[in-house]
Amino acid sequence: MGFLKGIADKLFKTKQGFTEKIHEESKKDEPITDEYLDFIEELLIESDFGVKTTMKIMDAINEGIDSGSIRTRQDVEIKIREVILSILKQVEKPLEIKHKKFVILVVGINGSGKTTTIGKLASLNTDKGKKVMLVAADTFRAAAIEQLEEWAKRASASIVKQNEGADPAAVAFDGVSSGIARNYDVIFVDTAGRLHTQKNLMNEVIKIKKAVQKAYPEAPHEVLLVLDATIGQNAINQAREFNKALAISGIVLTKMDGTAKGGIIVAISEEFKIPIRYIGIGESLDDLKAFNARDFVESVFVP
Image 1: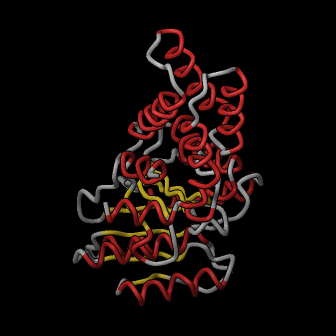
Image 2 (image 1 turned 30 degrees about the vertical axis):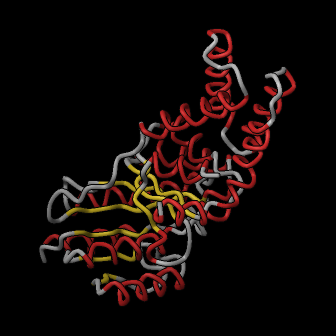
């Protein structure tokens, strides 16, 4: 329970914005009215569950009412939990580093927490005794290279970098080639995080993926998309564009501690069925958590 409480404390904004309001209604010894159901539906939409997921939850509630399995407002809350858990269970697939020379291409918009996520994952892997390399293929910002270099030092990982303005695809090719030749266990490739809505910039990331494949034909073994949970429904649009361009194999949702609209994790899970590998719930290394559906739901709904 200490572990769950630790997560729950970090997710208090989502609890305040969503589950505590449901709890308050559940306590009332009042019938299930149309007004109450409208309240639930509006709350789901406001909490970034999205229309598709909201309709799925409301359909399950109405079916339960019709069948007689839902009689009280507390039953409604239980049903909401059940549906959310069933959706999140589909995407509970931890990232497995299955072999040496495992290449992870990390993508996402500037400000999503992409480079920090790479740094934390590098630390987690070096702590396990793995030999880790970081490839600084976000060459458009000197700050991105410097930030990755700092993380490499903290994580006791190697880094391949060039000067700001260097060709990102060339850096990716050189980095992966070097990592493979030197028998590294895990190679993380950082990428430019500029706007996904600008086609030429998305093409840049596609070029990086092709360069990685050229350096090592079976790579990348994981295309990891980092999304900022605080941007809500925009995260859905980002996931759609990146997935279309790169065939995303895993997602990290960062800044879950900073949003009252935690339903976005459910909306993304229902929309794409792409594994949620990790969630970020704070700044410290320990605040990057391997995603566990039951732990997440219980921590959000804990009284």
